[in-house]
Length: 460
Image (cartoon, rainbow, N blue to C red; front, side):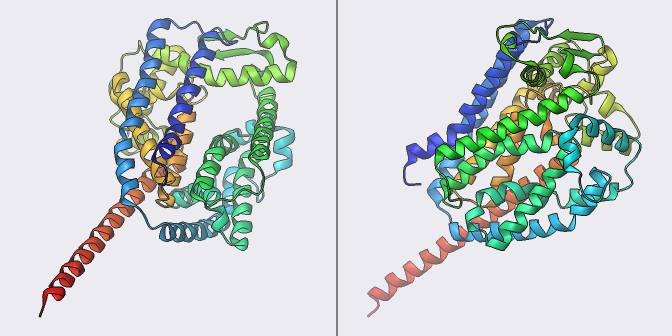
């Protein structure tokens, strides 16, 4: 760490970004094109501000650990070699599971990307109906769970350590990543592309800072490429929204049970847009705002704890199956909200807060969010210091989680990322303990050698 002040600013960037981003989502909720009209706007606003304070407090609390780690130093060459070994294994796994994953997730041997681009809404609806009728390849999904750290970690680790990879590994890794993203495109699903798009600039920044990623273009050209990717994603997103069932994107009408909201198409921004632009703008602000509307309604619900399972639909469903109940799904705040108002637990956003509050209450949800921010600060700091691939994967998952705060508890909702999060966290903790033990042993050997030398010097 040659310049401590510069390092600290680089470490602070995610916190500064997400504070600004979440403030923007709050502004769009209260003053955007959708008149959500929450029952208790002051309470909602105060809670969202308190959440940002909790995030800042948790993130800043991690600085002491990051600073100690920076002072301890690290073997960069060994960390890079472990990362490359991880990548080689991850690429093999991704290739072996490519066709089985396509059969499970698209119903075909190879994903039909062309049809997904041409008719994203239609293929999304068709694939949803296919999966709803039963997935005969569900065993593939269980296999992916066991190998989830490699499948989830391939993209972030490959981006960060790209310039350290051999040409063959680059080609194999690029094909594996492209195939993975094509599964989302072929089913008209935004998640995979969105996760990659929002995290890619951070991963590039990280790799360039470490020196493990050398840019072949200027910073200006890179920013232009990111902007072009974002515009392309918005076009894909808008086309899918225009074709989704219900017509929310095309008609500007949002229906969730007893709640019906119509977008103001003559507000200060919408009035200057054509139809395609307006669909993107209204759909994006609907995605970012509807979760806060659900949160405002959830404040008034009476509920009991779901004991650590209700924050995740994946965990809740499995807990229900094990204990022979529906408490962990129907008894969660999103489940109760669906029963009371018809606001769909799976078909509508709730923001991250009701999911966390299902287990620990709304005050506890702020504490959990602070702990997640602490982990983001720790993992981002460790990644900046070149502490290997595990903190890179963990901060990638947490970056995605924080982007989706207005929508849901994204990382823990799906089985693959939920399991990957805990396995990666465990692997990082174990690797850190092993490194500390090795450093302690090395220090002990050095001290012993020094003491022996001193005796030799005074020996007659």
